[in-house]
Amino acid sequence: MVAQTILSSEAVRILVCTACRALDQENVRPGADLIARLRERLNARALSIAIADVECFAVCKRPTTVSLTAPNKWSYILGDLDAQTEVDDLIDAACSYATSETGIVPWKERPSCFKKGVVSRLPPLNGIKA
Image (cartoon, rainbow, N blue to C red; front, side):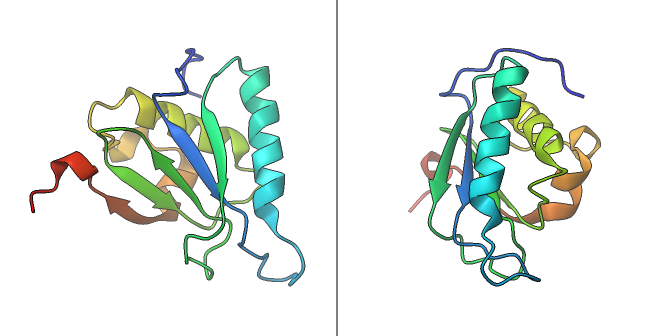
């Protein structure tokens, strides 16, 4: 588990898709459950990481989907998350991401949900030359 450091809400955001449907249950949308569990665990671990819901990441075949994002850093989209069992791993992933200078987290520092769940990585907007 990553050391429990107080992180500024400006340092990292976890964006959670609330449109994702459970593959085996059409009417279940696990994103809202994940948001509630994240907030509860962040509070218990005394961590300040911003959580926000988004309507859709268009990764419907890999629910539940989240994004790790921060200003001037690469962003990640992670899929296949289990809202009930991977909350602490996701928080650990966000902590590793927050402490990375560029947002690129070395493979060995990634919890299992981060290793298996990467859908894409996007460059920081300020790093793109038009």
